[in-house]
Length: 122
Image 1: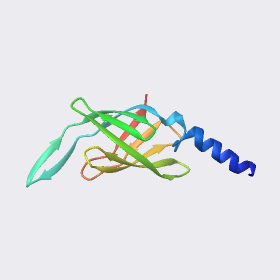
Image 2: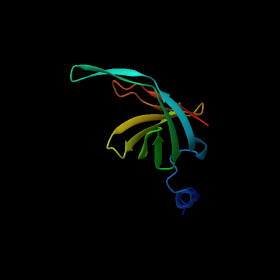
Image 3: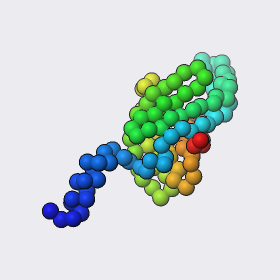
Image 4: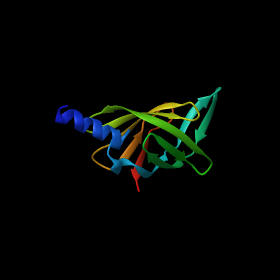
């Protein structure tokens, strides 16, 4: 076997599924801004919501004062600026998020009418 094959075998056995460096794991906080939408002809306003996000390899917990959602994710792209991840929450909702490489932020992309949320690592 060549040296590179041995290195790949050893690293895959010991590192497992590590799609990005460990420094991106941990606790993040963010706030979803107030937004308004039309439901059955009536305008409904959603007040600002504070979130806590706990990110581990392969899964996450998204918490508000009222509830905790569990989810899993997979990395869909590794760019120069961020890791794109596809999040599947236990509610069945699938979302696109970004883990920024240059600073300790994670962006939950907007799903109309819901605005995006920028999480900052604690």
